[in-house]
Image (tube, rainbow, N blue to C red):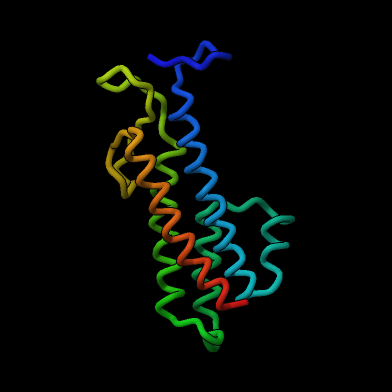
Length: 156
C-alpha cells in the first residue's frame, strides 16, 4: 500500500497525479467545446462564466441546441465535424463522470485505485480505474481535444 507522505490516507502519488491530469485534460477539452459554442452563438462564454453554473451535460445540450438552430453552416466547417464534436463530447462526459465519481479502493494486488459502480441506468458498467485505464482516457480526451481544436480554429 502506497501512502502519501503528508496524509494518513492511503494513496499512490503517481496515480493521484494521473487522475488529476485526466481531470485537467478534460477541463481543457470542455473549454474548447465552450469556445466552439461561443463562435456559433456570441455571448456564451460570458453566460457560462458569469451565469448559473453549468454541468458538462448542460454544455452538451447547449452545443446540440446551437448546432440545430444554425440557419447555415459557418465557412470551412462541415456538419460532420460538428456532429463529431457533439458525439465525442457526449461519449467522454460519460467516461469522465465514471472516473470522477469513482471511489477509492484497494485492488487485488494491494494498490490503491478508483472503482466505479454504475447504476442500471448508466451507460458504463461497473469498472475499475487502474493506471492503464486512466492513461487510456487521457489519450482519448487528448485526441478529441485536438480534433475539436481544429474545428475551433476553422471557426475563428
